[in-house]
Length: 75
Image 1 (cartoon, rainbow, N blue to C red):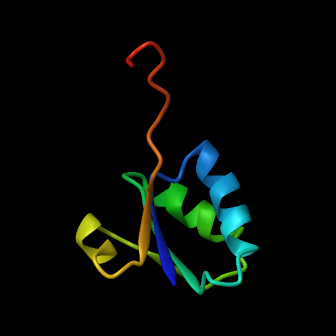
Image 2 (cartoon, rainbow, N blue to C red):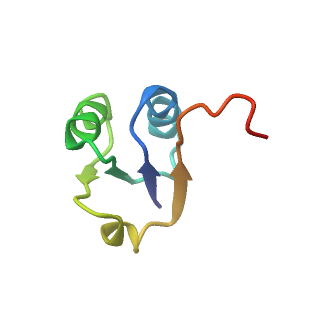
């Protein structure tokens, strides 16, 4: 399955490392408002990666992680 990640900041690194260990995951699709963040994250992956230019490119993924920044006190 291909996993999509929206938001390629700090915690996304941990997600990518864990997903690379899962034998069911065959690839990743990454999106961030800063393309450089997605590119840096793709470099640590041992899986095939698609760096998406917009959210519509994530339409075919099997599952999606939405990594938002910290919003302390907003719950």
